[in-house]
Image (cartoon, rainbow, N blue to C red; front, top):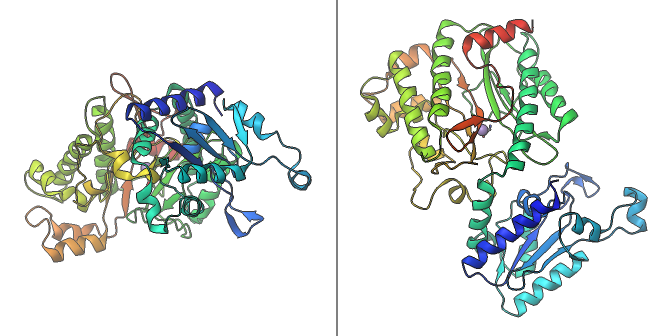
Length: 470
Ligand code: GLY
Ligand code: MN
């Protein structure tokens, strides 16, 4: 948790933004509840709602809060423990002391939150709320505001959502410190993963060792670990395969630290420790794309342009391998890169590994004058905005040979005249995939990677690191 001044300042800034838009009424916030895994006393590990953490800091279930946008009054709602709770949980600080810790003067029992919202509704005051990320909170909004399930998301407050996005998109210095810590832990986790690769063991063994690092020093993983010899399946969460020689292993994983901030890195390793010439050729293209994207990332450029120019570098490389033919600019415009990289170059990162996607992917990742493409690949770009200092984004190009997608495009006549289907089919259908990902902070005059210990990425450095662990 940050100093209380951080939360006071954020809430003040939020009120000022909404006042500047002429917004009135109340803004309501609901923290996450415990989520039962099997029955009510056996829950999933608690994870607080990220916007709640950002404004109210308290990392505990069953809290709610109201900001009166007209009086400026802030009230925190939660129940003090009783003797029945103390038996199971031990003594707990009072709700009022927790409120004081984050600079909130007024607190009240949780049940009063429903009454206060009900009163505002009865008075026909505007009730602003964020789109909920969890079903529990969807149900709460249904109850509080008399909404149908399908009405909750569309009834969320656009002014509040936009104000929160604008604030959370640009990271403060105290957040950047946390993101560097999350980066350091993610890098340690990945180093353990890389050094554990051995032929003949099952993938899950490596996953376990990596996740032990994040659990020992942080909150856990920032998303379910992707570790697979089938990297062509972008989000492959199966870890049941024995590690075989001659394969490529994609490890896409990140750490979340106790403050809730995330990291997200991807590296791809030759299972036996040495790339084959064919693997190295494709790997080098992805590596060049990662370095190129970083080299042009700076304030003023859009991440859409970084994506597109990086796809140009990728297509140049694929052209040198005779996997595509023709004018590279034409191929970029036609979306040919989508056959090889059917995802975007990156996404925002912060308290969520895909930061704020619960608030709306396009609102978060696109400027008002930007329209999302429908092309495969570019259409999955989650962060397209014009960059400003304080944005934290991922740089994660990849090349994948997806047999079903290649067959699909060929059958549909897509990419005809550009894509060398004969060579792809003869030589690459068993290749797998490669992805290389770093986390990047946009600075005043360029960019820097977060986390102090960048993981080896050039093919020779990767082979050296693997050899050193054997
Ligand atoms: N690293 C997982 C993702 O970006 O979706
Ligand atoms: Mn990512």
